[in-house]
Image (cartoon, rainbow, N blue to C red; front, side):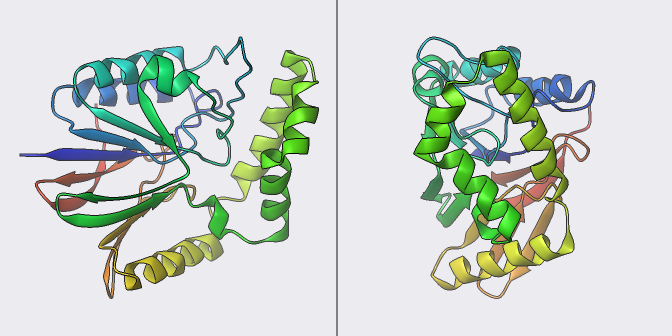
Length: 233
């Protein structure tokens, strides 16, 4: 028997009261049962590592992920549009593989994964992505005092998050997934939208993992069967 889990968009640091506790309960529940856990971006509402410091929020979640890793679960953490400035902390201290895009075979299915924010080509989204991911933006941001840095990050994240749940983006993600499925993949997994969905498209399946703010949803491949689940405590 095998079990592989997919979660995204917890936005730790900006979620409602109790949201992180619910995520912790989920992570505890799969310990000893999960062959792999794929975090499909935006685990944090913002993450910016420096050489000697990491954000303090989300510490318990990172500890639980590390515990999963030590118990034998393979952890993969994809970059989102809110938490992409990872350096060595996650791989060194948590035991998670870091990536922007993952292509691999899971239970004999060819799976393609990314957060999905790159699909949104509207002007504001493109500008936000280029600014936050540019080398110039990184250097400028690193010069800002830490507390002010977090305030700026929170402001930018709120603007970005407000644009994520809409029908235009929902269909753009589905169209993008259809293109990947036509290339020979069996399953495409993305997040970013905050709307959970498992959709059959001509050549395979598209899974959007939803979020851990309101839906508390996750994807799963268990013994080769793909499903969309909701965590109930």
